[in-house]
Length: 367
Image 1 (tube, helix red, strand yellow):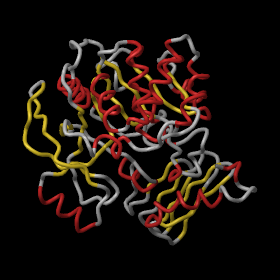
Image 2 (cartoon, one colour):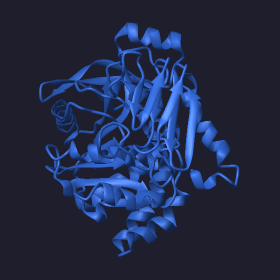
Image 3 (spheres, helix red, strand yellow):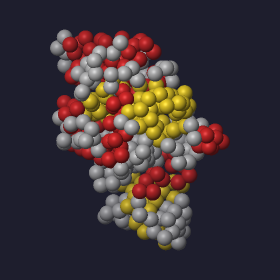
Image 4 (cartoon, one colour):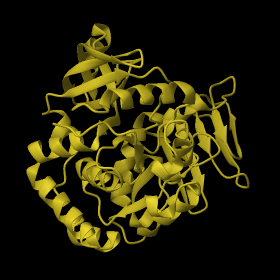
């Protein structure tokens, strides 16, 4: 049984990713979410600036890591510095969700919180806030685990999918659907069938739930993770300092995603369909749709020029010219200490390239 409904709402932003597919701009200490990949400000800054209509800044927390915390504080001066929490080691999203619920619960044990990625592109802030507000309303005072799904526009193979069921309830005039199942990234033919059915949504990794609901789910489905969270909770209640407590207990938490740990097992999972624009800009080619292109489809940021070429992406600094001649579908990204050249069709393999670079002592400093 849940405690009486609370009026407190929080947002926790997950900002610990490495952004390896955006190398060489994205580095461990300043990855994708800390860069203006799309727009003029860091992605995490844009994410925070969407939220004041939903929650006050003091109710926005960021989970990041030690390497990135200082840069997050710099990118988010509107947030209290104590709201930016550094995990000592990455333990995947279930541990992050559990820690978020624990920290929010210390402020209000009956609060409702949204978990959001730091690096998605959303232009329609008003529609975004309306959907999140309805999700908060659906989760408050109820044992519901909510996720916001994106209506697919193509048979994408790079996203997980949510199969929605019947309308279970409504919140602020919007349908809340029962979730039949979560499915992993499909092959192309399966993705086409999902698109044709109309029953599937992209899983964007946006969640809303009450503190009691998600803590109960973790206790039920991942008891070993819950035990570690309780140890953290007890140390903090006894006056332990947060960083020292996390250093002691966090590395021992079970490493598993929240989808595998809870969402694919629970029977109280629901979804709402986004009515806002959305793009996770997962690799360099994805930013082209957010840029002005020339008549040949070339997209250029910084100092760049293309002759007798089409559909190229050039990203450079303003003081270093990148000139491309007679090529098509090429990515060229120049930074002061590294340059990437690769076909657009192989953009997803940049992560593997970065892994290989990390094995060579000469290049570790470039990661």
